[in-house]
Amino acid sequence: MRRTFQKSGLIVSCQALPDEPLHGAEMMKRMAVAAEQGGAVGIRANGTQDIRAIKEAVEVPVIGIIKRDIPGSAVYITPEMEDVRAILEAGADIVALDMTDREGRLSKVKEMIDFIHAAGAKVMADISVLEEGMAAERLGSDIISTTLSGYTPYSPRQAGPDLELVKKLTEKVPVPVAAEGRIWSEREAVQAMRLGASYVVVGAAITRPHVITKRYAERMDEWLRNKLRAGNW
Image (cartoon, rainbow, N blue to C red; front, top):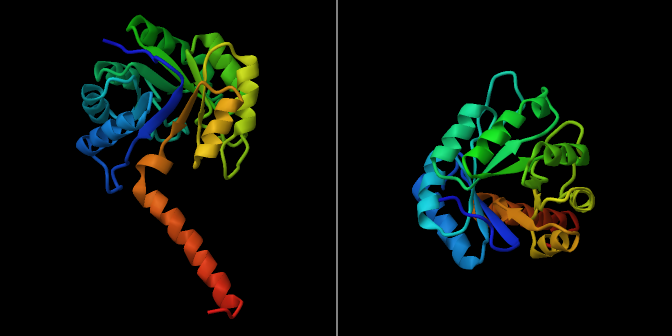
């Protein structure tokens, strides 16, 4: 049975790539359970094994993606119909699709959107700029997410979340907006909600301890280097 969101709030992205220490469906399932216990209203998961394991373990909706490299293509998130089918068969409640305007993508996704809706699931559009979000809504997407801002050549590169895009989307599209990408603090999450986001998706800042540790270590090392340069050691 497909689940729907009961309220706005935090979606936790529980993902680990094959070269990362927490990779594996069992580990991601436990991470998802912990996120649900902490108050997450949804989980975002990558790959059919993780989707299946997490779907069986939590009561909140699961957003499914498949990250897959295709030679010669920049489209990485749920690139083709076979990925959509696999995600739905794994039980995801929502399927997230790359809906950037690359490689004629926006002219190809309508079939995927219709297929997802026919299966009783919803569509999250991962976009990078306002125009893509508006196009994704017109094509039938149920949620628009700022996931890919900063990851296309024509979207702004910045250290923090693209809150300006969140604001513009909430003013222009009638469907819920999810703020996603480079959200590292509760303050940023609340600011996104204040600007109109229905959901805030947080991944690395919650579920990737090696990345969190690296941020601490780098900041502390920088402080030590500055202290040494100033001759205060």
